[in-house]
Image 1 (cartoon, rainbow, N blue to C red):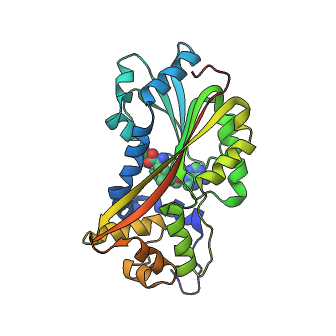
Image 2 (cartoon, helix red, strand yellow):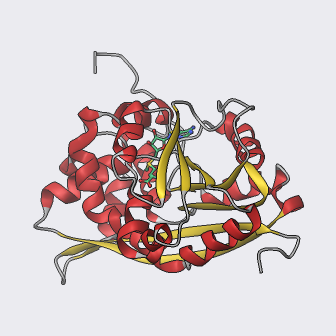
Length: 299
Ligand SMILES: C[S@@+](CC[C@H](N)C(=O)[O-])C[C@H]1O[C@@H](n2cnc3c(N)ncnc32)[C@H](O)[C@@H]1O
C-alpha cells in the first residue's frame, strides 16, 4: 500500500480478494471453511425440498438464483454429500443463474455445476444492483454470501432478494451471526489493527430483519435454525491458520504474528487458543434461514 493511503474498506477488499490473486488465502480458508458447507448440506433434506418446489412449479425445469455464488462450495457440497445429484435421474433439471460482482467467482462456481444443475444466466453484479426485470425464481439461495454488503445498501439488497423469490418458491440464507467467529474476529481486527476504522460485516440477524421488513413474511414462513460448531486448526499448521485468518479479514498484509501482537485482536486469538491440545478453536454460530410459502402448499 502506498504511504499515507488508507486501506480500502470492507466491500472493496472483499471484491479485490475474489480474484486469482486471492487464491492462496481462499484455499487456506476453505481448508477449514468447507465444514460450513458440509454442515449446511447435512441440515436439510434438499432433494425433498427441491422436489416440493418442482411439484408446485409444474412440468418445467426449475429456475434458481445463487446470490453471491463465490467459488460454488454450496452446490459442490450438495452434489457430493447429498442426494441432489440423483434428482437428475428423476428427470428434474434446475436452470442455475450465477450472481456475483466478481467475475472470478462466477467462473469458479460455473465449473462445479453438474446435473441436475444446468448453468443458465450469469449476472456480474451485486444483489442490490440486479436488474429488476430478472426473475422471479423458484429457488433463491445466498450461503455465506452477504457479509460485505455496504450498510446503506442492506435494505435494497433485502428487497431485491424478496422480489427475486416467486411466491411458490423456496429461499435460503445462511450466514454467521453477530457473536460467531466471522463477525467477532473481524470486529476485533478492525478495532485492534485498524484503530476502529472500517465497516463491520453484516450479520445473519441483520439481513433476516431486513428480509422481514422487505415483506418476506407476506408470502413466506421465515424459519431460523442456529448451527453452533468449531473450526479447529493445529498450531503447527501455520500456513492454514494464517491464511484462514487473513481471508476472514480480506487482508493478507497483516501476518499472524502481527495479529497476535495487536490489541483486542491478540486477546481474541488467545481466547481461541487451546494450548493443551495445541490447536485454535474458532467458535462458529451460523443461522440457516429457510423461506417456504406460507399458503400451506409447502407441507
Ligand atoms: C464467501 S463467498 C460466497 C460463497 C458461496 N455461496 C459458495 O457457495 O461458495 C462471498 C461472495 O460474495 C460476493 N459479494 C460481495 N458483495 C456482494 C454483494 N453486494 N452482492 C452479491 N455478492 C457479493 C463476493 O464477490 C464473493 O464471491
